[in-house]
Amino acid sequence: MDVYLSSDQLDLRRDVRAFLDREYPPERILQMEQDEEYPDDFYRECAKRGWTAMAVPKAYGGSDGSVLDLCVFVEEVGRTSISLSTLYITGTIFGSHALDICGSKEQAAQYLPGIVSGEKRFALAMSEPVAGSDFAGMQTKAERVDGGWRIEGVKGPISGAERAEVIIAAARTANFPGQSRQKGISLFLVENNPGAPTPGLRFEPKRYAAMKALMVNEVHFEGVVVPDTAMLGPEDEGWMNLARLMDPERLANAAQTIGVAQAAIDSGVEYANNREQYGQPISRYQAVSHPLAEAEAEVAAARLLVYAAAHKRDVEGPCPKEASMAKMLANNVAARATSAALQCAGARGYERDSHFMRRVLEVRGCELGGGTSQIQRNIIARFMGM
Ligand SMILES: Cc1cc2nc3c(=O)[nH]c(=O)nc-3n(C[C@H](O)[C@H](O)[C@H](O)COP(=O)(O)OP(=O)(O)OC[C@H]3O[C@@H](n4cnc5c(N)ncnc54)[C@H](O)[C@@H]3O)c2cc1C
Image (tube, rainbow, N blue to C red; front, side):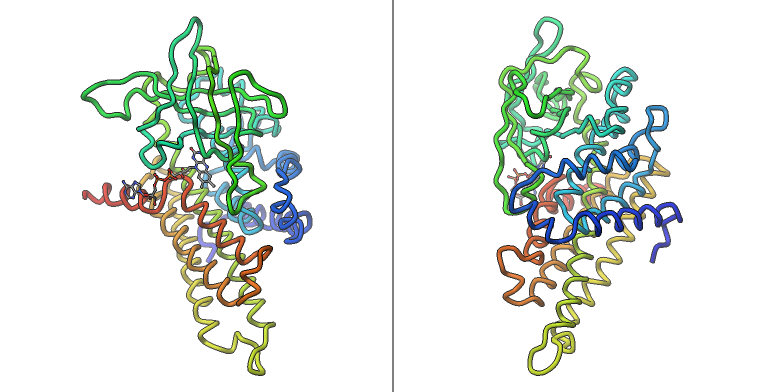
């Protein structure tokens, strides 16, 4: 079924799997989530092994990986933990692609080598408590001050913000009455100093049911002043650039949920083959085996769509319709697969520390980030002319 993958991509997948199986067995993931332990060591290892270089062009020390390479990588990491894969996606993919889409040469030179070395992790602050799906309704404002901009407002929930060295923040810089609200939004590269207070920046943790190791925050911009050079892309035109950033974000999101779904199915099969009821393994009952069989087929199909969309993005450029289709399908298929696996584990699946339950909750979180499934359907329908 690996019609789209090169031998290098298959090697990458094998290397990542071997590393994660050795260093992040299920007990460690459980402990990490229970302790809300931010996986610094995982990120350091990614840098050491050249994986943070994948999203960065060769000119800046990277290995110029394709979006499909990144999807293969995050799918495999998602199979182990969504906290780990999301940390990678926000830390490297958001930063490198945003700089590629709209960064200046100076900004690229300033930040991209740090993504490669693992010293510059990014976070993307689009959403606000008052503006989620409708994020053009944002209330965060940036106003001109001498030599730069002062940013005021609350963004959130934002993945990995507190530990990021750079936060890409969307803020309203102007209003254009009678025109689209999408105009007048600008992007800023806001530097943060994890571990020490950054003047004007305050983080509040969001307590979610899963992805506890990742640290999702509400970020309070309380008069943060950034220089003129911190503006990313043209003033008032940030919306279009964010829209272009959504392709890699959604494809990576889709790929990681495929990883979770496959892990859930594999665990379900193992459990069903070992659990006996009425004198035989429960996998002998079609009522148990068929939902997992159906999930296996659905996940295989969704994976192909994700790979095809990533390939299209690599070869042809922007592919918003395909990225939305891949995200919606992968998230929905993964929700069904993780639920089928949970059901087959019976009460054990419902235990507080069960990996079956963790995966159900992880997939629900992915379904919200990057635009919900309803929003993806809206986008697809728009491209269909409705
Ligand atoms: C774990 C996690 C991590 C996140 N990380 C980030 C991050 O790093 N950066 C960031 O910027 N954001 C992040 N988000 C925020 C995420 O993007 C938003 O949660 C998402 O856009 C939905 O916004 P909302 O939660 O405010 O829901 P709302 O927009 O209030 O929507 C509520 C419900 O109404 C539906 N709805 C709303 N409008 C429509 C419509 N027009 N048509 C159909 N249905 C509609 C939605 O689909 C949803 O079911 C994260 C969220 C989570 C859960």
